[in-house]
Length: 463
Image (cartoon, rainbow, N blue to C red; front, top):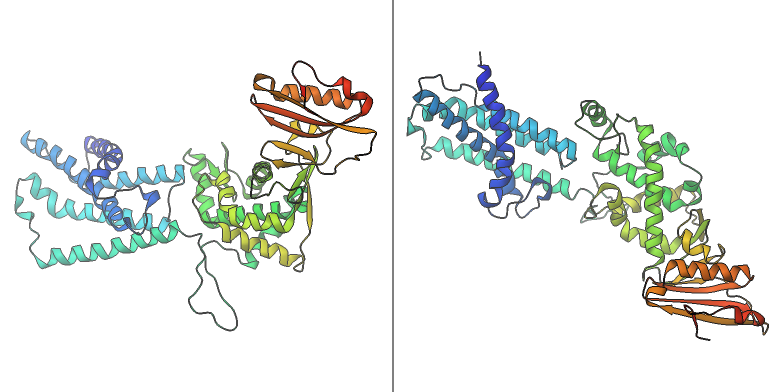
């Protein structure tokens, strides 16, 4: 029977060793990195450290206490391995909460080997050290060397598992292609069977915009495929149990945050507005980027809807989905571009391989700026300039006037005020350039007799 005092001691030692392993790591081995950042260069040494460090730390602390207990005439501890077991339980809870387990199999192997080593030390080594018999420290025998070789072998296996999981989203093309097909492999399941299952189960939950905008639909199901592969159905059941205990905050197939456990359908419903917001942010960035070529053909918009060229935007998204997915998962380092490509190709096959020329979706991408143009169709012609898509009639009865301001007068409020005045005279704002508190210019198409209305101490007429 283990004394309650020793149980409390084991718990205390485990709590101390959790931060101690991280603190000692950078100086304990060369090129130390946390488990989340394993790679093929230092993975072996990190795995070795993760397995052995908690054993040594716990055993050292327990042995010191045991020696003191023996010197005081008390009974020494008899189950030192329990502190290592408690250490791995604490680490498991932390990693589930933070979602930093790269591979459940690799993590389990690390914990099992670490606890196993601690158990062996508990049986053969610690009792001798507590009794101050140091003859146990002898690495000259063949058995010890064989044990180290076996340990090294398993450490390398664990490191390989973690490295493969770290780059799991990369597709691997086999070196030899048969004349029939070229196959690809990935830990993310993007088979037609799985993608059709997603469509059948969750497609009807999506709003109309996800049907109007096929790339938004592809983004949604790509995220679903990744999250579902990372958290399979069986794991999500355990995750909901952990959520009730307060150890997990994200549940369901879409891994949404909630104070209560979410079903897969509930997580989908919560993720829809979030993914729509992500897509809006992506389109805003695209509209003002050099990759979008500052062209009305690539992307234009009003105060209610947007229009983009499907071929141009899909090609750009093939190369940048990983960064967009970073808005959802919190890291932009995962290479998920090929996962998106597979989902997009699946969606296109559902339409018999036909793709639209233009896509129109409902959203207010730039509500403030489009109000300057009476919600007409506009586009970013450069980083700071919005222009109407359709140039107005340049007949002699109309005149173009350019008004400029600078410094503290170049503000969104002053631009909005001027544009409102232009609209009140039934004239047209043709172009607006604004760099807040630096420079502003508004080009107006107005009737000749209205020219005198425009221009004051803030706005200076340029033409």
